[in-house]
Length: 260
Ligand code: CO8
Image (cartoon, rainbow, N blue to C red; front, top):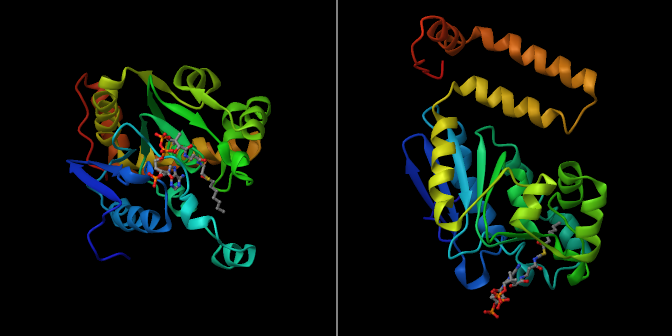
C-alpha cells in the first residue's frame, strides 16, 4: 500500500461519494504503474468502508486519459512484461465492489477507454473522444479492450475501432452502447454528482448485488445468469434495507436505507 500522499491522482470525498481525478496533466493523464498503485491504494480501503456508496473516476484539464504510459512501456522486453504481468492489477480496480462511474471529458484512448469500460456507468461530455489506438503503436489493447469493447458494442464496431485505431465521438459512443449518457461539458460534473448521490443513497447490498449480477451477464450463459440473479435476489431478503424499502413503499413514505 502506498503510504505517501498520491501525486498522480487527486481524491475528494463528499459524504458517501468518493471522486478520483486522474492528474498527470503533462502527459494527458497517462496511466502509469505508479498511478495505478495510487488508485488502488486510495480506493481499495474505501471499498470496505460502509459509509462509501459510490466512486467517480474522472480526468482533469479536459482529458480523461490518453492511455497507458507509452514512455514507461517503450523499452521493455517481452520477458519483462510477462514476468511483471504488466497491468494485471487493473483487474483489481475492475473488481472493486463499490459502483464506479466514469465521468469522461476529452480523450479516453487506449487504456483510458479501457478504464472507462471497467466502470459501471459511463457518462461523457459532448466533446469526449473514445478509441483503441494501440495498433498505431505496433501493439494491441492490453487492459481489456478486445474483450470488454466487443461485449459492449459488438464484434463489428469493436473490430473496426481496434483494427484501424480510429476515434469515436461521444454521440457515436452513446449510439454504440459504450456510454450511457452524453451531456454538455459544463454539465458533466453536476450530472455525475447527481447519479453518484442517487446510487450512494440506495441500499448498499442491493446495489452491489445488482452490479455484480449485471456483470455476470458478460461472463456466463443465460440459465446460469438467471440462477445467479435469483440467488442474489433471495439473499437480499436477509437485509434490513429490503424490509425498509418494501415497507416504506406500502406505507407511502420515502425509505431510509441504513446499509444493513
Ligand atoms: N503515454 C505517455 N505520454 C503520453 C501519452 C501516453 N499514452 N499520451 C500523451 N503523452 C504525452 C506526450 O508524449 C506529450 O509529452 P511531451 O509534452 O513531453 O511531448 C504530452 O503528453 C502531450 O501530448 P500531445 O502533445 O500529443 O498532446 P495533444 O493534446 O496534441 O494530443 C492525444 C493528445 C491525442 C491524447 C495524444 O497525446 C495521443 O495520441 N496520445 C497517445 C494515445 C495512445 O496511443 N494511447 C494508447 C496508449 S497504449 C495503451 O493504452 C495500451 C495499453 C496496453 C497495456 C498493455 C499491458 C499488458
